Structures are given as C-alpha cells and as structure tokens.
Image 1 (tube, rainbow, N blue to C red):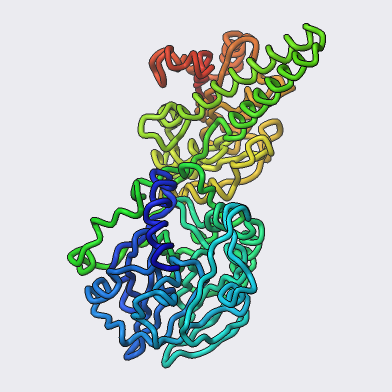
Image 2: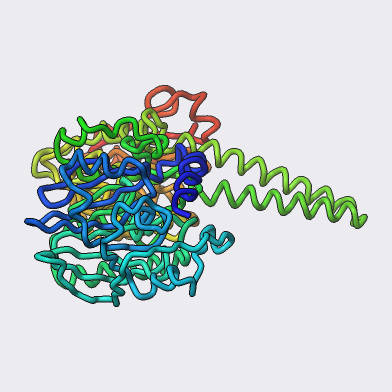
Length: 544
C-alpha cells in the first residue's frame, strides 16, 4: 500500500495544495548537534543522535532516496534500531509498511495503543470530514505500545509520550530528553504561529484544538525550554509562537494568510534539496511574520454570496409556484443586491490584504504613522488598534517612545484580538508597544495622559455615537502641547460639520488644527478610493 499511496500523494496532493502555502518542509540537514532531518517531498523524518544511539522519529514515505539522503548526514540506516511513530498515515510509516524495501525491517516501532487500532484493522482512517476512508496500513516490525504520559528509555535517550488525538484518534507526540518535542501532524506552523494541523485531514478538528490546549498546559506547568519540531512545517524554540493559534486548525482549502514568503509553491518539488545544501549549515528556525488580518472579514463575502444563492433559489421557486409577481421580483432584486455586495466584498478584501506589497491598507497605515512624531521618552495612544498595525508602525518610527494600543475587540471583528496584536509586535520586533482593552466611548485613562494620540478608521464604525463626542473623548487623554493625528471617513453625514469642529478647537486654544484629505493622492488615488468607499478619508491633525 505504501508505494501506491506515496505515488498517489506525489501526483494528487501536489496538485491539490499547490500555491496554498500549506506544506513547508525543512530541507535535509541538521537542526543542531542532536537532531538531523531528511526531506521527503512535503514531509520530514528526524534522527535524534546521542553518543552511539540513533532514534528515528517517524518513517516517512516509501521514499527511494531515503538511504541516499541519510548518507549525506553520515547516518547509517543499520544504526536505526528504534523508531517513534506519531501516527500511521503513510507519509509517517511508509518506510516500515509491509511492501516497503525493508530498510528498517529489524527496528522496533513505538506506537500509541489507540493508534495501533488502525494497524490491526479495528479502526479505519478517515479524512475530508469523514467522507473518504483510507486503506489499512500494515507493518511487520515488532511494536511497543504506549500509553499517554508513558516514559521510557532508548539506550541513553529518555522519551515521554503524550497522547494528542484529533488528527488521528491515537496521535502521539514525543518529548525527547526534556528538550525536543516532536509533534508529527499535531501542530502546523503558519508564519503567525502554530495551529492544529490541516482541517481536511483530521478525524476531529475540535478535538485537535482541545488536545493541543491540554498539551500546552502540561508543558508550561513544567516550565520546559523546548525546540518544537513539526512533521511538515519546520521548527521553533518559541513556545508562545508554537501554540499561538492552536484554538483553530489550518484551513487547507484556502491560500494561507498571512502570506509566507518562504513557502514553496509546490512542496513536492524538492530540486533545492541537495547534498551541498545539506552540508551548508544548520536548518533555520521558522521566522514569524505579522498577520494584520483584513478590514473586510472573510465571512462578509462568503456570507453574502451564500445569501445571494439562497435568494436566487427562492425567487426561482416562487416563480415556478406562480407566487405574486411582486414577491418574485423582490426576491430577485434582493439576490442581485447580495450578489453585488459579495462581489464588492471580495474586491475590497483583495485590496485590503495587508501582506500584499503595495496594498491600500499598508499605504494608509504607514501614511498615518508618518504624521505621528513622539519625542524619546514620550507616550502615544492608538485608539481602536485592531490588529496592531498602526500602533506597531508608530512604535517602529519612534523607537524611543512608549506606544499603547487600545481596542474593545468586538465580535464583529472576531479575528482581531489583544493576543494577535502582541504576536504581531513580537514578529516586527517592536518592544516599545503594549496593548490593552478599552472602549473609544470611554477610554480607561485619566485626563492628559499621553503626549500624542492617533487613530485610523475607527470612529465611523461606532454606531449610535456622536463622532465629535468620540473625538473629544480621545483628545481628553492628550496632554497640553501634545499632537494628534486621527484618520477616518469624515463626511458630514458621519461626523457632522468638521470645519466648524476645527474652528471650535482653535477657539479653545488648540493650534495648527486642520483637515488633510488623504484620498486625493496623499495615501491613495481617488480612482482607488471611490470603489473602496474611502473617498471621504481625512486626517484631523493639530496640537492641544
């Protein structure tokens, strides 16, 4: 089975996941003086070397270059007497399946008790939300069956096995010598942190997330300093990064966000995995990339499209049933409206993707940040910080300042959170910014707390509020002599008469108060702003 399965994956999965940035295997080489890695298409197998002992972690595909690549690393297959198996998928056991060449025929396999039920035929492996049942895997090697939390020694190497079900019912991860955590397909590393592995291949995605939360708690309780090593997406020594987003799986049907510039277009193409590269140096750790999400949530386009389809179906049914013409026409018009909104949301989401090199949102954030100057030792408040983009941009431009981002992180922007902001700051290396919960309608700060205040497209989203009152609340927190730069859609129907507001501020002693239009070439061109509904964008700037 392993030969056919390996050949099938090479063809079918290569096509299915091409360009989606899902599989990001390490090249063949060494992670450090203990751990060696061999690349097999999209998968990695690992060898833990300590003195004269060699422990293999997973057996990979039925891959005809395994012995060759082990030779690049100076590891003789005959030295491998023990293999830890995380789970029984063929890209993790192919080299020990019954139809394999038998490179490790005399090795002992360590397998979880629950996982062994697949190998004995008591269970069948299911993928794609249970819709497809994989053929049974058979192995002839001797097996040692493991329970959750079981500790044992392989020569001089100490191993602990932890049950992390979800991807498969008996998936194990292995803690080796208290310093290396081999996770198989339990964790998937995106550039913004670890998630549960691919949703399409899990037995139970919700269980995967719960299992990883439990695993994280166990590891943190022990205060371990670890290298977390995954089967398909590299390694990290940052436990915060490794478990950053394990409350959700990797959604494998979509191109991943944020964009990972290091991800191969097709993980099955391994032309760059050479003997020369294997000897060139240590394999690098995963480099975190900030994820500023998108001002247009994914569900907005998808939900509108689904609504359009439903309304169109209802209109068709109403016509066939000879319902009143007004009802049929009304449903058809509503379907067309939903469809048009879905098309706009998809267009806007594409343009607001922050990871695109010249994206509108990136230019706007950097434009607002260019108006924010904070003296060394000074403080700045960013109201409605969202995913932290403006706060971090200001912090990077003003490295001697202390920046505070506040947001209430409501359900309407569920993908934004304080944790996301903090991960983005860490990825950007911005150590002079912090984030906390706060509502723009009643900010949690005393009068005149900050030297500078700023904001970007926040107040127009707060329904039922007088936007000029909101501006006053923000300015309340600004010290005398402090500067402000507030960017929003400041049309009269949203904010009232902003020229009169500026005049009122000047009369109160504010200086250099002015409105700066930003959609006429400053941050974006008008032809760009109009379809994105940003034509009323203005900066309110001045000093208190």
